Amino acid sequence: MLLIGSVLRQIAVRHGTSVFDALRKARLPNDRDFLRRFPHQLSGGQQQRLVLAHGLLANRP
Image 1: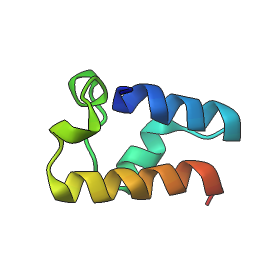
Image 2 (image 1 turned 180 degrees about the horizontal axis):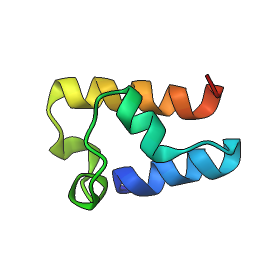
Image 3 (image 1 turned 90 degrees about the vertical axis):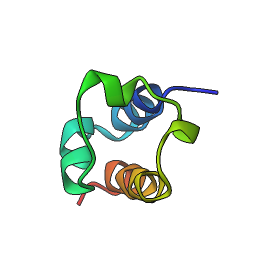
């Protein structure tokens, strides 16, 4: 299983977007401790917002 930060960085590099902007828009923390977590370590609401951040990274709003 991959860390949250690793997955977000892979998406951001592929689409030329900013991880920190997507986290801010999805109202998620953007500190290193958060990015070093695994998805199963998040609350249900945070998991939903993480999926939103994935979409924001891939769609270049």
